[in-house]
Length: 405
Image (cartoon, rainbow, N blue to C red; front, side, top):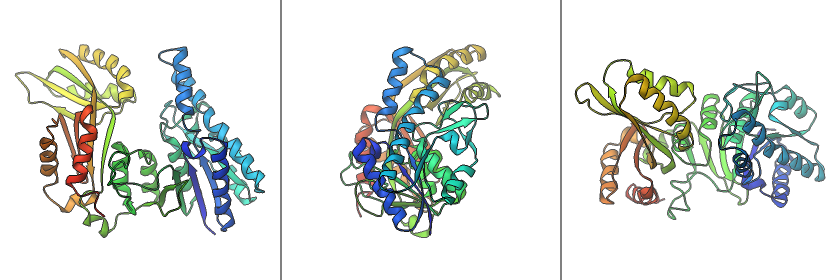
């Protein structure tokens, strides 16, 4: 008998019929002899609806109150799914993040899990109860409701798998696995049978929406096998697991793009030691995630420094950056938000040369200008104008043969 965590995303529980369908899938897992814990997201579109309600009240809603508001979406689904399982003859019980004991820090809207006190869930399992857990949410040490950021239900599922020492974690979604590119954009994209934690982490952090990046970090840290599969179509899905030798035979495993990008440039920055710390220290304290950083060659005693951030943080970052610029004596701050990031990912890059040159040649052939470049052992990312992102993804996918089985 295995302990299985089954997580269902928003499209999987978008209406009553789909919630009943999910109940049937959970029932099959239980009937197969496995013990199961279910984690669910809010109904598709519900979080966006709640965000719009908040912005109808005020342009900049308080983050604590946003967490309280957004946490209601999952509560609706856990109750309905527990009712559906009971209607099928199974003893099921709904649990909020607080009732589960998901303790987080106090960073509202993107809290980090500090620990899970899973005693209540374990007690339910010992009694033969199917726990139905609200994803995306937790509770801070100060008893404030917190949320784990977009895609946070993935993190809830993987974290529970680690806390309960589950045998596997199934992420049910509206696609049947992880693809070499977005199949809606690239018809020749193919499903990967397996992908390493490291590759999946890069893909997730670079724009692939199949798994939340922090959930992949958790899975890698605790060695949790994660399977991404469809709620609606039978199939084996994609296994996210430890790297093996076969994975290195493929140079590029995936091409991905991220439109949620903005570039901030400090112009005329004094070129002396300690300035970078005075810029990025306050940004870090404000929980603004800085990604790619480029500093130009200095002209005299001045230089320009550019970095990318999530587009959602632009307003907060601009206000803070203007204050920092005044403090350090920079000339001005410039923001460009019509940008995107296109990336190649693959553990095979470690043992194959010429990937970067081929990427740049491909983009040049399509007359796509590169603004910024970032590399690691297994990925290359380029910042480009947003209007060219789809073209860039298709061209790179064709160039690297990712669509060929």
